[in-house]
Image (cartoon, rainbow over all chains, first blue to last red; front, side):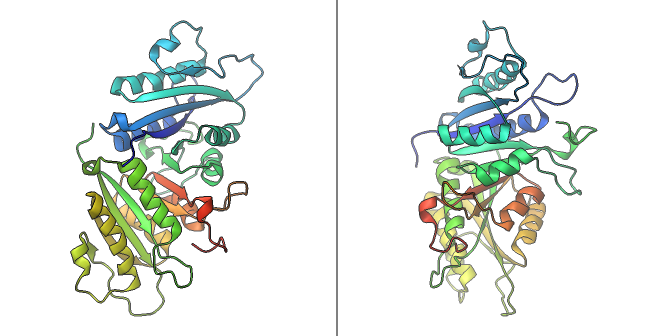
Length: 172
Length: 172
């Protein structure tokens, strides 16, 4: 069996729900599923790579291209929303003792995720996706659909639980 | 952390290459990836559920609805191609010591896989898919594309390595 840890890239984003400063429902669910069902208690067998793609809106964003691997790495900086997001996930990884790296890139999420897969070569890409209720047809967002086709590694797509769907299912 | 094993359903099929009596390249790759990169040496943390969907061709098929969990379960029967296929995967699971169950259903693979996910409720569905070379657009078969959208559990899609692509990329 493998000695090197399995490197799992999880793409995370912010909630689109007004007033919700937290991770999106689907990226939180995808991350938690990965820890509970795949990593389980075998924390030394896995390394989590957390990628947040910042959609550029001409706001002079400058935390891009730093790497964050510990909660302490977030202490000194004047935190942007994207940094708060990474801090949430890095903190969880440290709580359960699985090693991680997190970073921010800017651009179109679907393109940047595939580019980062080609650059970083993870063993697996994990993506959350929205979905409609159990008895409805499921809507898979363009990001996950695109990455399943184009990313150069296996892709795990995890839908929100139906009881987590917000009043507007396009929200996340 | 979880005590119950993570139940991973792997859908497997036969090679379409003339004269090749073995599993398809993509289902063999998906299965091997699952063992190497997810199960690793933590065999008691996972249970592998192997589903083969037999595409009906009016040939009086009768091994449907039996469950195979050990290599011995294959000894007495007059084996069909589908049983040879399951035996291959069950034998590998026993070699590395991960528990498994395997069964055959008949029908349209994409529909039957989603029905079996709804019935069996695995934690994860793993599907192999064909893919074209590294610098070409990737073609994801209708089965995996359909299941990513419709299966009621997380779906992991694993493409063939580009060096495993047969001369006709539609083959597998």
